[in-house]
Amino acid sequence: PPPATMLRPLVVAGLSLAALCPSADAFAASPSVPMLRSSALLSSPLPAPLAAKHTLARPAETARRGGAVAVSMQLAANAAGTLAGSQAGVVERIKGARNLEAKSYPADEGFDAFTAGDGQGTLLAFEAPGKDNIAWLSSLNIAGSSKSLSSLTVWNGPLADVPHLCARTVVSDSSVDLFIDFRPRAYGAYETKGADGGYGEPETREWFTWKGVRDENEARFFTPETEAWADSIRSRGTPKAPASGDDALYRGPMTIDVSLPASDESVAVAAKACEDAAGMWLNWMDTTEPLPAGMKVTSTYAYDTKMRAQLFGVMVAFYSSLFGDQGRGLAAADAGPLDEAYVG
Image 1 (cartoon, rainbow, N blue to C red):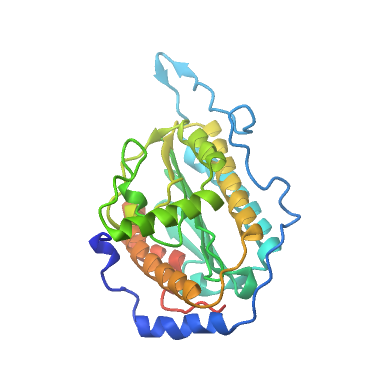
Image 2 (cartoon, rainbow, N blue to C red):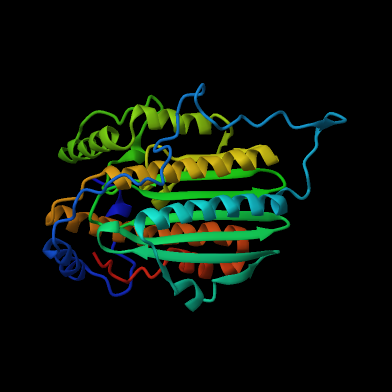
């Protein structure tokens, strides 16, 4: 059976399964959504995954002085502009392709412009209801002297089952930490993947259901080509410790979670990787047919709601590790109103 964390109650205030079903019924009652067309804004829908074609250069060997790596003490501060500018460009591309509407929630929570640690932060939020199918998009940037952060999170609506997107870079004077994940829209037991790349032998009826989810995702999203792209990024850094709990439960098979060397070139690599990930996600959004109205939309919505609620706790812990007591408020503003039903 699924891990125990899959079965625990939703933590979203006011939500229950009875509340989910009427919301999802609204999607089923909506007119059918035409197939999304590719956006002209995407000059290159998929980043080339092969090393020979990839545009990201491997960070050059850092200059050494007296046998020690010379690391700029201003790396975090210098990286902030590069990361924020890159992410702003991505948001503009999504605006043009998905008709984003600005949301006031970050300002309502006091996080549209704020201080975090020794840095200054900004948080923008958007949605694109209806056929554009974006329930929440947050663009967070924090520029500090000891650490800088840029994070783009996109939660899709339930009208199509394109994976959600999370792309985040944290820069300090010791490393450039890159995290990119495409979160699946149904449970596929990805956290059970073994060292051999397999998922064990079938022992329950559910195993076949989870395999069906993985097979469908691999055919449409997590293809050998896109996996090769992810591998090419992972190979540039040192893997972070394996995730656990809810964090592991909802990660996709293409998760990139690495520490790159502390250098300006690593910052450029991270920024380009996040741009490429957003381009890949946009291509999926433009070419994936909508789900048929009915139970599939309902189940996708229910799974998304549980995922967002449980990953909120993950982000509270993450932001608190960086910014102390401010972490919970920042996580709440970044996550958006979890008890607000998506308008399809």
